[in-house]
Image 1 (cartoon, rainbow, N blue to C red):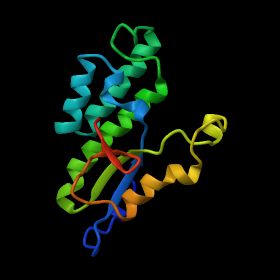
Image 2 (tube, helix red, strand yellow):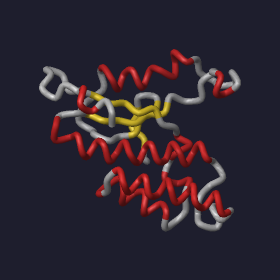
Image 3 (cartoon, rainbow, N blue to C red):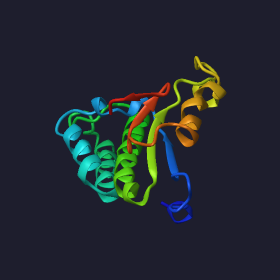
Length: 153
């Protein structure tokens, strides 16, 4: 949100936003009706819709009912699902201004976050995000990518 005013909408090359998400944050991690609510927010909603869903998760964790409400045990996965959903909302919002917004998963990288157990180096994990920022096709706003391949949400 803070960077949107800095994007050059009239630049000779399309401005791009690449959000680094995770395969752990796909729609399949939540049960119905949450899955439909996230899909609806992504397709037709706004920032307030994804924020409301994320607040619902926080509330359900606080009262201990997250599992029975259809939420997974993974806070990381839910945070990445929120990020991926917001990516699609932002892509819809900025498409008319010529800004391409994408989401990607870098894969499991050997970094502090994985206790150095990841299968990929950080440089290998950076391949798809850098490709999206600089060279990827610009015809698929809001798409989710991994290994330079489009993935389903």
